[in-house]
Length: 246
Image (cartoon, rainbow, N blue to C red; front, side):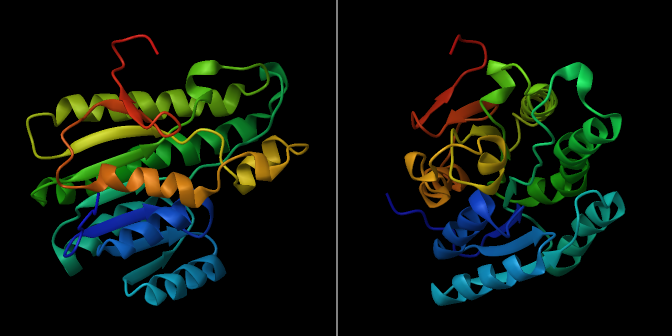
């Protein structure tokens, strides 16, 4: 199925590498103008070159999501330039540490929650008015199976992703009568730097490349999407209703 996003504006966080990078590239390939956000300028510049190579366009916005004032300003700047936002991909996140809950340092716990949860809420607050101006706003919030498995030693990351899913579900319920569709995404095991940090002994060739995940995510940005308030399981290629057992 061909996804046509010509004339649409897409914001992607964590766009300098991994799932964010390849999702931004897929969106641009489909015709969207991509606002790419990340801390790493070099990665954003590489993305810009890749987007240009497929005939797409991008605006690079290098900043750290811990800068809450910058997140607030982002929405205002998008409004001034484009007047709306059609697609949000809230992808950026950090792992923290793999450690027993009682051994996690306060500063580590606070940083993970700040980047993964507070910054996501702040981003939602900043761009919601712009998404509501779109004829078919689409918000995709990256989550993780860790939000549900709650494996030993993954406490801080699991907690942050469970909170992010709760934010997304609540937001979807609040906007269900609008044209905005809000869904969470569980990408499954993916060949990323975060995965390598968490699973240092794993052969990366045994898990899917982020480009495969990005290709599965792209249809969720389509104006034809009808689902909202659900969790999309990339590996299974299906939505899960939170009210039903997985």
